Length: 108
Image (tube, rainbow, N blue to C red; front, side):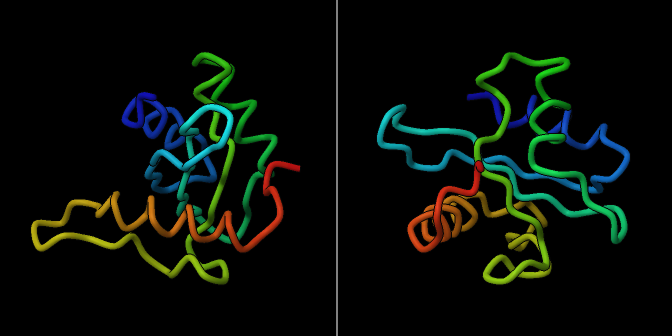
């Protein structure tokens, strides 16, 4: 997986302000892409629109299987940051794994 490449593609979307991509545990593949997204405004693209957007420029397997929006229940309103301002991807990875355990497959 190439998180930075996927994040850069996601942030090219006009409705996405910021993105952080982490590996989410998957029984079949070991790990799949999960994207934590910050919307630019109140409008949000659908999960399928986001995946199609990524697939227009990147390989099919790089499209995030799981998509989480900042501000949604259980996700929080901002990215967890280190003291130097970097995103704590380990926290997002653990949060994504926990959210997947507690909800049905978000990929519908």
